[in-house]
Length: 316
Image: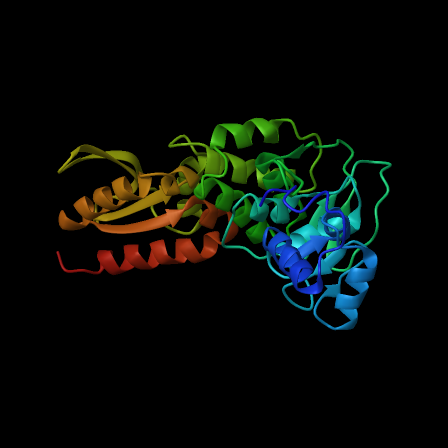
C-alpha cells in the first residue's frame, strides 16, 4: 500500500474508516502496526486508546498495536521484536533468515542485534545481541542482517550441533545464498565458539566432490571393523561413466557420500539416475549425507556394517 495514501489528512478519520486504515496497514506487517505509522495516517493516541478500550485493538509494548489478534504472531512477531527493541535494532540469526524467506525452522526466540553503544530495550521472547563487529542492515522494510551473516550467526547461536548444521543447510538448499558467498563470509569470522565444528560443516555443505567427508569415510570403516572400500571406482552406466564414492566389489555394496551440493538445484535428479543405474545393475546402494557422518557416524556405520554382513552371507 502507498505509505502516503492517507497522509496529510486534515481531520481524524471516523471510527469505521480508521479501523479500515489500520487493518490495511497491519496487513503489510503480519497483523501489527507502529503507533507512529497510525499517527501519520491521522489516528492519534486517543483514537488508539478508544479502540484498545473497546478490545478491538491490543497493545504489545510501547510502539506496537496489534490489529489482527490479541498478540503478535507469525511475521508480526518479527516486526514487534524490531520496533520494541530500539531504533537501531535489526533481525539476526534464524529470525533474519525467516524474514528473507527461509522455511522449515521455527525459532523459540527471536534474535535481534543492535550496534555497540546503541540504546535498546529488553523484550520478552527476544534475545538481544551486541556484536563486536557491526553488520549493516539489509533490504527495505523489516530491518535485518544479510543472509550470509544471519546464517553464520544462527549456526553459532544454535542450541546444538545438529541444529547448527540444519541452519547452515536450509539457506543453501532454499537458494537464499550460494556456497561461494557463504564460504567467503565465513572466512571473515574472527572468533567462534563452534569454529572446529562449523569449519567442517561449511566445508561439507559448500564444497563439491572434494569434500573431505569422502576421504574420512575409509578410516571410519576400518575403525568400525569393515574392510576398506574402493574409492572413486568407475562403472559404466546408461549415461556414460559413473564414479562411485565408496564400494565393496566383493559383495556388491556401494556407499554414496552426499555433500551439501547434492541437495542443490538439479543434483538430486542426477543422483537418483546414478543410484538407479547401480541398483538395476545389481549393486546394493546406501546413501549417507556427509553431515550424518559428522553428527551420527555410529548409526550410519552400523547400517553399512549390517549391509556388508548381509550381502556377505548370500550364497555365491
